[in-house]
Length: 511
Image (cartoon, rainbow, N blue to C red; front, side, top):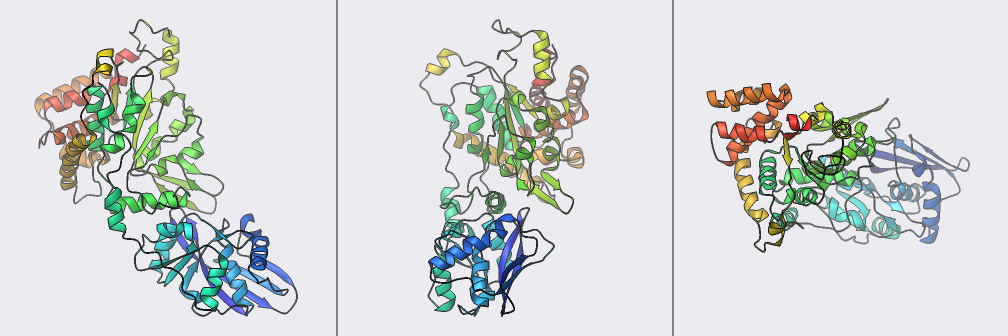
């Protein structure tokens, strides 16, 4: 008897429905699995056999042929255990198969018949709804994630016996229902850190506010203990809240990477990723034999923080150049190409020298050669892509001992939101939404300079020997500063402040 069961495969951040055809006949004995399965799927026969035996069923001693279509698409992982097991039982007449084709069935089996959670549930559920399936049957740990998708029945099971009884005896499975909008609104403003906890550093806070208002990349340069990491960790608390669309995009990526917890249904705050400096280039941008999203994709719609940036391998930093411009990562293999979104705000930090002090500090023991070698770890093209360079000075004792709290993140966030509203209105007919995304056409249209501003930026270009890309970045930052002041036109003091945020272009560093 031939039975068709439906599962799903993940490709990038999208899903593709897989038809699992199970045929059982009496012309011999054997177990044949075809359709480009990987080793985890090939080994499923052992898990299925033990699981069925432990719930009172068995794999029949007949010729079993299982085809996973489309047969030219590679299938990976152990998530097909449940669908194959149910297909074998239905094809061998051990259970009824009525309405079995109305459901996507996915789950990894343990030897006792219980189910383990799987990856990529959200894109699987979205695809199931688009293709008109009535429902989806999953391990209980994954149901909250799938329940984000409306107009789809989501059933969570803890044991394969529950699935067998659902089809065989009509026993009711409990539906998981979630009010996505309510849950999203309840958790949208939950932040573990606040800018009011940062003592002093008013100039750095201002630079952070400008960066958040325009979505600009920023690098913090300062000695150890000056508060660079402390400032960086508080950036998500002043960024605009995720829209529901952005939350779904971000959740899909984390779902594919298997980073969603059992109690998490939807990402409600912008991600903050802080990889260690020993990270490989593949782990940062994504890839591998079976491509997975990297840290820059996990930071999509959020913040990627590179602490002590010069300590990262140069090859790792250089692979970020294209994603910083294109806001997506393309991973190419001989048989396929995968795209992962990576629109993130880069926040980096570094010491000003190998000894940790600024070049003019009496405590600086680094030679000119050591300084140059240290700075050369960051290439000019990469620094060009960082809009704001801000020096973070050591915090004085009086500031540390001061009991008065600084400005709260919520107050800074309100100003950032006003600036973003201006940008959303300005770009409502374009494919961009904030200043950092502007291209040459938008710069020409929205960043007109008066005579004084033009003279200022011309002098800076000549004196600092800036590149064309740095020129564009200064204009973008100046536009953001003007938006924070609710100014329609860019004025000379906006340009002047934007030029001040190009610390690493100054002769001071070219020792």
